[in-house]
Length: 326
Image (cartoon, rainbow, N blue to C red; front, side, top):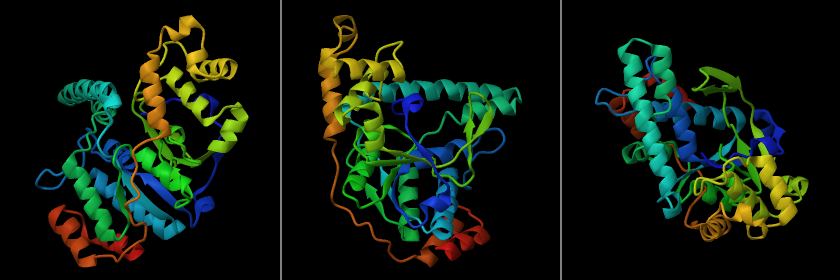
């Protein structure tokens, strides 16, 4: 989920044509969860093959990615999450409980035939399992598209690639990517221009958003380290923040006092400063790898057809379209 910075963010709205020919490091787990949430039947059941393998994420990955590459000449490198940091355990437990609650509501809505409610609850039950990730990595391999296994957070690895100028920008929905130091963050790399909001049962228009870290820091009159402190006051995937403090108030506090350790005592008392410093150091010095190859390799057409058509029950025509694009 990441940190909530939307009210203070400085962004530029782009079109896909503005991105033509750029190389992007894509937060793969973030990307796949979008497809798991939305590519479902009317009652919220995810797409699957005859053996019950979930294929929603593969369908989205195949068709969106090949269109972005073919129609806009984008060079995409996918980065997968590694082992979650210990600091994230509480957040992962909370998400698990939320998914369980949503699953119960989904099944109850299906049972009473309320498919609108069922779908809105189903999109919050998405799980990206190890076999599903392995399928996605196999699909990328067969398409010839490079992918990287991050040692920890994919956003950190994407930021590392962007810092080294091996990609033009990191692409993720999560603002955490900025906290990891990505010089450019591209949000909403989508073809449809829509995002479904399950809690409101409606869609909203979307366009690619480019956030330049240096521009944001200059506007906010902050250092990168201070931006991390703003996030820690709001709350991140690693800490709850302080209740009642949102982005604007957090920004004002850090601009006034400079750091968490210099905040007034009543605010400091609401923070675990030792844990906050550990999180700060994780954002500043995250685990990343330099063991990767970013070049595209050959399309394995026969193996791709076998995997998607024979094993995962995709239509031959749609797979042929993706092959033609590549």
